[in-house]
Length: 250
Image 1 (spheres, rainbow, N blue to C red):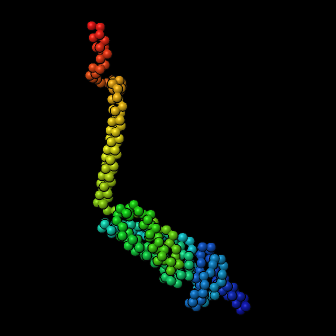
Image 2: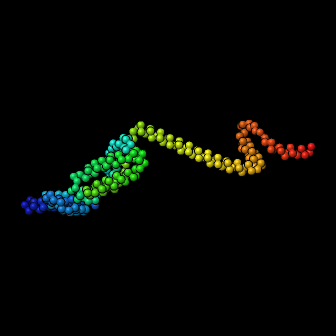
Image 3: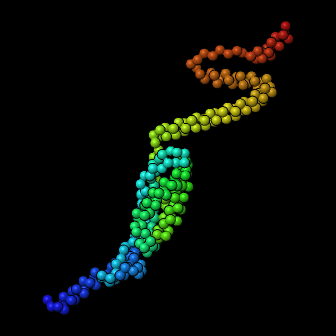
């Protein structure tokens, strides 16, 4: 093998090693002799061996799990809260130049923000106003990570771990609330029934015949229960016409 052949092989290897290919969702921050040049990709491009260095940065949405954090709420209740954050890199140059490790930095920032924000709310608010808290967390994180070229799209609280004694207290409170609503509904029903009965009594009381018809209707309803014996007084008004007739004949 001649020197020319060796040189050709070396040149070919150098050219092949200098050719880089990036996928559609990847970008490369290129440094030449330590100085940042530009962001390249996607597709094929060439780097000078030994002179140019690159760092790949994915542009797809990253799902980051925020570990459970010990939070003391505004009403002094200790809870554990974990969350999930969705973000992506929109400026690869900033993500590499402005922060040492944007993934680690974003994770730490999410943890501290989660603790500080939830500490401003009471436990009931954390349980009932998650959507409002999620929006606030997303806004704070997005503002703080914007200089790093990172866009926080969504932050969601996944689980709130409440102490056992507090769970029992919440259960008792919920039971008391259900009982209160039951009593209010029952009282409202009694009030409406009393009002309707008052109106019905006024209508029936206008004529004696109406009272007698209502009495007979009650007897029909009671008679459906064949398993029991019923003793009831007979109103004297029912015999009044017969008594008057007998008096006239006598």
